[in-house]
Length: 208
Image (cartoon, rainbow, N blue to C red; front, side, top):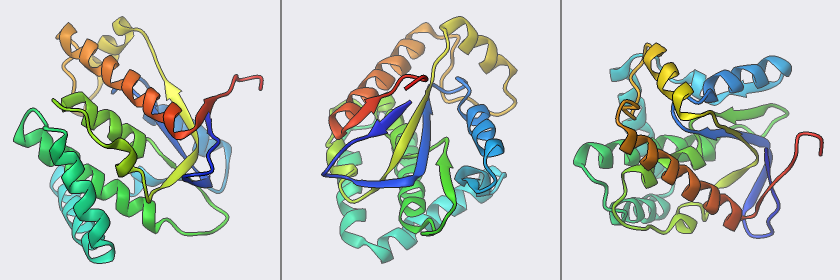
């Protein structure tokens, strides 16, 4: 578990996120955390289940984000394009996903509820790193975002990742039968953890 300790970035104590490799148990952990608290909301669970409907939601959120904050929209778009994604499909994927998450981040209610993501800001950073050919201004991407106070990390060994990916009914971005992609994914995760550290996240032990 990582806790944000920063005087620079917005710290939303009722925001949390789960970060990890695909099939590492992020969604399962989110469900466990939500079940422990009556006022905890799984943000991603609110999304449409169908692929087409979900893509339309991302496009809509991108449009609303542009209307709401055009300068941030343009800045973030330029930063992600500058990361030089390895395919047009991945460029569209990380852009549309970032718009969705950024819009959710700006528009979660200020109330007594706790909001948790299994596909949040830092998982999106992982996604950008995974298919990026260049370094990118990740601090610029996080500049005006409300960062989660708490981040949980899910991690299992490669053999378990492969087993779980074969058991999943939905598609997995990583083909875990390709060992090079596992290495690529873990490299992206290590870079994401470095970003978290630079922003001001500090790891806390379970007992502490």
